Amino acid sequence: MQRITVKTAPIPGQKPGTSGLRKKTAVFMRSPFLENYVQATFDGIGGIEGQTLVVGGDGRYFNDQAIAIILRMAAANGAATCIVGQGGVLSTPAASHLIRKRGADGGLILSASHNPGGPDADFGLKYNGPNGGPATESVTEKIYARTQDISEYRIADADAPDIGQIGTHALGPMRVEVIDPVSDYADLMESLFDFDAIRALLRSGFRLRFDAMHAVTGPYASEILENRLGAAAGSVVNATPSPDFGGGHPDPNPIWARDLMDTMYGPDAPDFGAASDGDGDRNMIVGRGCYVSPSDSLAVLADLAHLAPGYARGLKGVARSMPTSGAVDRVAQAKGIACYETPTGWKFFGNLLDAGMASLCGEESAGTGSDHVREKDGLWAVLLWLNILAIKNTSVAQLMQAHWAHYGRNYYSRHDYEEVDAEAANALIRDLTTALPGLAGQRFGALEVAQADEFRYDDPVDGSTARSQGIRVFFTNGARVVFRLSGTGTAGATLRVYLERLETVPDALAEDPQTALADVIAAADAIAGITARTGRAQPDVIT
Ligand code: VG1
Ligand code: CO
Image (cartoon, rainbow, N blue to C red; front, side):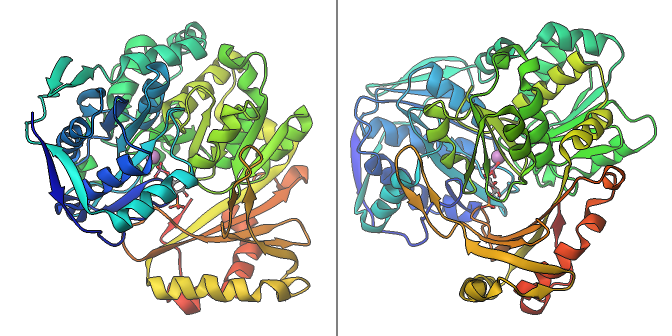
């Protein structure tokens, strides 16, 4: 094998966002876009000489070609071993587990997650460190800095081996180990949950439907839910991963998982429905006629995780992203455990998990996870739910009613305005930031502002600071609205507006969230001028 050094020049726009670098597939495919970013990653982390890396992706269009390039570059940069999922496939949580289990130095995960895939859609790449978690901001800053002064990249002139079959290959002096992407992960799940109890539940007539949305969790869900737990054949639907996710948006929310919602709210609905996203780290939970908001799901799991063997000793603490509702805070308070509030994105949970300060984390965007890996984990959340339902012998709807009756209900919704003109979106945030000091005391319809600020996070473990992580407006009645711009999009800007209000009056707990939040929704528009500035009368997505 020859190591070729290719001259290159910086390409603008290679700044990692909330979760790695995401761009249009065509942008990633235009050489040397991928090569530059991979070399900048290797350089940014201090080189990969002698290292073991895990490599895998969600199987979207360009996944296989990108992996071939990455393997040739890893070999030319001196890596000792690359562990690759068969066919180049690894779900994000499975990749995180593999890094940890094998004691690897890190991994490259190819995914744009919930973004659509295909030649005209999105592609992404991110680096995870030796703890199995997404690189911290200090690392992504080094990678970004390298993209701006890169002058060459290294690549092997040999072909990458065929990764379609399990086995070990050589690429020059580098080993390429092709492994079964599912079995290690399935074993991990079996070690955490009471599979016998879930099997008994499923034998008793409890029906479930898992929608893999043509994405990476198909093979994982089929193996775990149908083969190991005995769910009826066909319980896992859309189970074959496809490069463009069947033409859909692999985002598990009531809009994009519409089929599942219709089934769960239709006649003869199963007892339990769930869906996962492109790379398998998100989850949507829906009972018969009962959608569970991700923030509520986090709170329920925090309350009842001890019913699963892996969490029987209780939780060390919990953490949630700032825009996530305060429902989990109330559980933590009742249990006397710490609750941390972090910026959006899983990379901020890693330090808390590593330090043993939190063992359960979650985001309002359908991400939940624990210290079993260092990523959010869709199937894990589904299994924890099933374990809880098996022990409690109750329905999802009953469980939610009992939870709200005990803790109160944090009515919650997120309104997304997608592909808004970037200038208009930036101006909206800029002007809002300027207006912050004068907001307290102002009335907007029925609500009065108590306090408003820009969220900043001081990491209690490494002392780092993350600024400008979203604008928070608190009202005197305890309601809250948060505004921030998405860091995962690839076209224009997406404005996210997060709305929340706590209700504790017993007979006001069963309202439609949009109705319960009407005052907050109106105030959000009045404060930020959303309609006037974006020209949108309605959000594109409501979750
Ligand atoms: C979104 C979500 C965030 C999540 C991130 C990655 O980020 O809001 O909670 O961590 O996606 O999820 P943003 O910046 O677009 O709001 V995944 O499953 O797409 O890797
Ligand atoms: Co994802």
